[in-house]
Image (cartoon, rainbow, N blue to C red; front, top):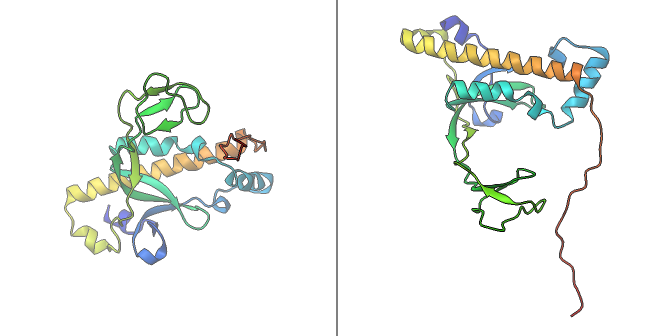
Length: 202
């Protein structure tokens, strides 16, 4: 277990200047074992808003660790998945739109409508629980000897966490490859309603 933890890939938790690192896995496109048109398509997908399609393994990982840990991407092109300590918090939203799902910090009263699509708003049944990452390091600069100084129970728990992280990273990687095989990037024009102020003669 000490060998496994000490030799595991690591990456910065934020920028390199903060000096913190954690367990990590490289998921750069050129390391996925794809080439030709699949590689071109992978870069097209990277330029789109694709995370919602592959976030499920991360949410499951967070649930299995009760929001105490999460997985985030880091690196110039987001080419590393990094293990972060995390915390569960309520963002403070009190109501939501029945049509578009827009969240609002105000409680809905009779006649409350969404500011985006004008559909009715309803109050949330319970406060939302979101997970946010902390930038602190996990086992930064620990050597094999440092790991061996820890208790067997601690080592076992830490190895279980990191193996669980590795499995979730594999699932994210596989989900991205499925995107390449099962989806195509399409371009569309989306009209966004916008409130503007103008002068009108009295």
